Amino acid sequence: MSPEPDPQPINFDGVGDLDMLPGPAYEAVEAIYQAGKMFGPLWDTLAPSIFADEQVVTTGFDDLSVNFRDQYNPLKEAIGPIADMVERNFATFAQGGNDIIARYLELSDQIQPARMRSLE
Image 1 (tube, rainbow, N blue to C red):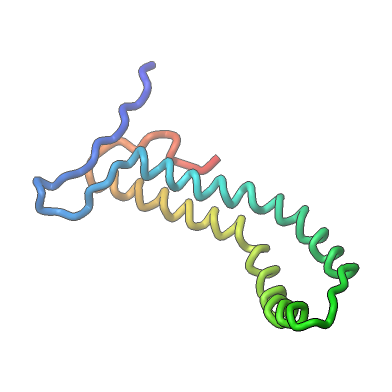
Image 2: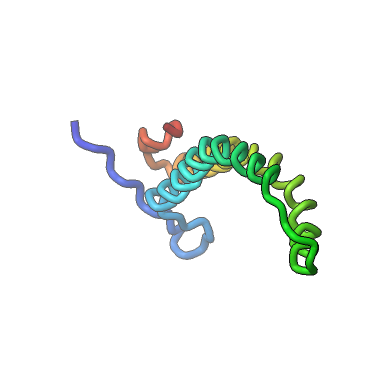
């Protein structure tokens, strides 16, 4: 069985603005998915270490230390919940990208490659 041909960009004879190279677009979407997939387990490992280090690190009370803590502490509260959602959000973004590419190919009457049917 021969491999599926790479879909060709849609041109609409120069009157449309929906030109896309589906292959490179899919590769970009897959890179987003993989970045999230790598970040999730890494964050799960690092977050407890960061928290543990925060408990034992002491800083002085000079201007630099006080200014650092004034900037760090409010951000620390926001980062955890956001980082916890990175893997899931990136998977959602990637699935949305795949859906867009698939719809693009559907509208262009081209065959959707099997590799785009699911993120794995």
